[in-house]
Length: 391
Ligand code: B12
Ligand code: SF4
Image (cartoon, rainbow, N blue to C red; front, side, top):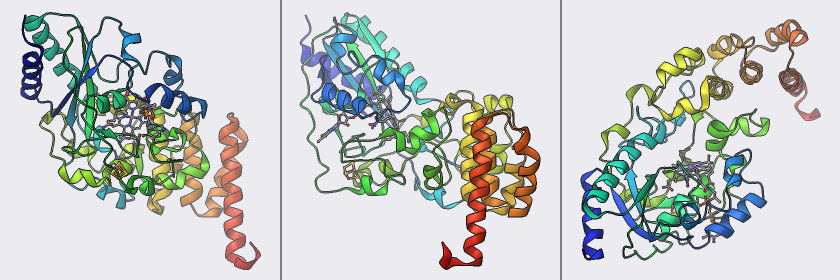
């Protein structure tokens, strides 16, 4: 029988040789605070329309409920720290900003899972036992588990922060039936810092360590299937897929090292794509451009919805015809944001002419509302221009 500490050391060496950057060992049981934190989050409705978070709420916080034979959870982290300034592209309004994690050609789920499986095969052949591997692919709360395994702590932005890799770590887990010595949980090193809370463009943190996903740009641009609330659109700026603001401003990132997995490095054409080009993607183009990328998850309509919000926020009148071209798109999500963006960028008279033609034939009530709201906004702006004191 091999000494469990020696198995642990061998697993660590194997993980590093497969390209993982961080590793920790946790008991296969609920991490402190995970159950109550999730219950609190769901009771406040912070999950929005991510019904799947609520669906398995009894299993999610506790690995033993997911797989009772598991004894140890090995948590693996892969750095995706960018080599350049991650927020620089936010200052280019004619470009779309894709969050760093989605700029790579390959989806991190696939990249990490392939390596976790390789590690699992090696572990089983060498030391026996049964195992399962996950990268956000089962009802598992990965951040509290990673904190319990000593990989880092959950920062005030709720993501895991590592003293070695900052906030740029993807997480994956290997559950095994082998009982191995556990690591001590990492302490909270946020102190009095609140940079991430203050950086959030939509004020999505009602309190430190709590995120209301319904206001989070990452949720609104990736997970949310419906129309983006009007009052949040301006703050989205040119963020068309995810948001890195809270993660990027964390001072612990000064210790971050660029990840070793080249498959997670950014694709040139996703660093600063032109909004004009993205708005023109049809379903087939979208699927071919984003094959293998996490972006394919939204589908073309939600993605173009996001691109139109960025176009509306661009202030660039040369993009008005791009928005106008989508006013008769088959998708109501797209038409609605084409109306919003056109209202922001077009000459009012030209917009009103289009409205006269298109609103009466519009079948979707949400899109009809967008026409009304945009027209009302234009009248307010016109009245303000004539008599600023009156409004
Ligand atoms: C749902 C989800 C989202 C949702 C909701 C996020 C959220 N914070 O809940 C949305 C779409 C918004 C999202 C966004 C992002 N996500 Co996400 N997401 C997930 C997912 C699938 C589940 C997270 C979850 O369980 N949420 C439920 C809540 C209840 O759990 P929690 O966040 O841990 O909340 C805890 C705190 O609120 C705490 N708490 C409550 N009150 C208090 C009070 C005190 C004092 C304390 C200490 C704690 C505390 O208790 C809760 C339970 O531990 C995980 C993968 C997974 N399976 O775990 C990835 C995951 C968390 N996401 C990830 C990433 C990278 C992101 C983004 C950076 C992507 C981007 N660039 O756009 C953003 C970051 C936004 C943010 N600040 O969270 C990574 C994070 C890696 C890391 N280093 O932590 C994960 C782990 C995926 C992965 N495998 O790598 N995500
Ligand atoms: S930015 Fe500051 S408060 Fe937020 S996670 Fe990092 S250290 Fe903690």
